Image (cartoon, rainbow, N blue to C red; front, side, top):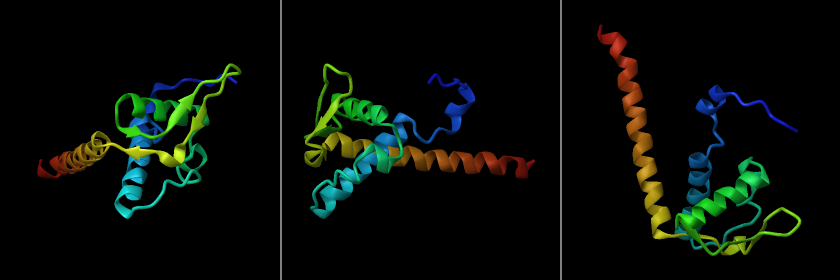
Length: 123
């Protein structure tokens, strides 16, 4: 099924790479800090609310960028990629650093947005 592309949809898309990567890394950080195993039912496309294809691609990018380790992706001849050892996934120090930087950028964005909203009041 072909979907219509609308560039305006990208502005409010909560399922973009950065939001999904942040959710995954945040869960892995939680597991690390609480000494618990990754739950495959929680770290899943269904739970995050995205397609399996987007989930696999996001995991692949996180692996390639060095933000996560432990999980492996096995392409199949028939097409879909198999996710192996998802329960062994963990955030690397680079992944944890990404969370800190992303959190700081989000706070800076919120402050700049508040200032921008106040400017009309100053006129």
